[in-house]
Length: 438
Image (cartoon, rainbow, N blue to C red; front, side, top):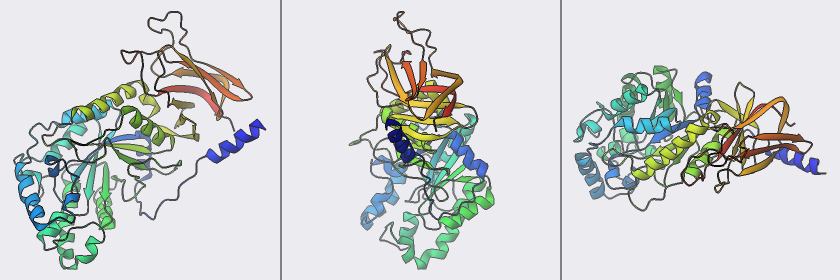
């Protein structure tokens, strides 16, 4: 009876492939495979209203004319991120295991971070004065990270300057027939600049449904190898889907509660929470896009840097379990998540939910979806098992035992990561030459 219950539970937990919405998708298959391989990226939201710590762009929706006039005139006049050094943020991303960065070239308010000919509401008309996007692209390429552009097809300031004083998101462009032709030409110029001035753009994230199809068509015509994420594939925001999805998808999530930098009244997610989210996304076949927000001077604050460095420590130990993986026959058994290498016969078991696992302690886990073979080997990533520092009496080697109940693995947290001998983040067990239990 016990086996029948387990088989029924396993069947219920098998991947359910979500039905994709009606999205035109002309992404090249190899580019979507690249996203599945990469698995982890950085999102950067940044705008002139960071000087106020307010929500990015949206404070203009429903604002008074006095507020909008002040926003449009005064915030660019004082925006001078004099400490901006893209190398700092790119190195943080690279160390954390991120393979690409998506930068907000233009958010809904219409402020452009490149030297555009379309508007004076841009970075080159601020005290900073330089093409900040060009600096960012160059630095990404220097460190081997793929370049992604976020682009909103909304433009609050364009609408406002052209007589549409009531700024809103819902149905906004359905009531702007008087400026539609002018705006379409404006939008085409911006997309053309982004697609022709910065070399190969690896990824493009289109926010908003207005003119989305037109922009997609332009991007693919000018750069056929550009991978469009939002607008062409599933991009859940602030959550991980509840099921495994076979097609390429990407979940985007803030490091705190707000996309733009929020200097006060902010609550940051823990490093452990974000690592677990990354693991869950990879186990379910997706990529994880983690958002950070520079401050008015161009720096990431200490809290965001600290979280990224914690992610870097985890990646340094476990990075091979995040790259080039695909879903296993089940995404998880309780708090243990799984992924398999896309080519080689190995499965990774990510052991989550044990934040007080002391160094030197051995724990055993029964895995029902994996079966050993005559060539099976298991190990804990990052540690040899030969030495448990200051504990010569402790055997740190990983062992396994196959029975009719399943595969029991026994592992020791042996590696010293933190000085207090405790490390709250998941360990990863690599199981080589194993088979599905079904």
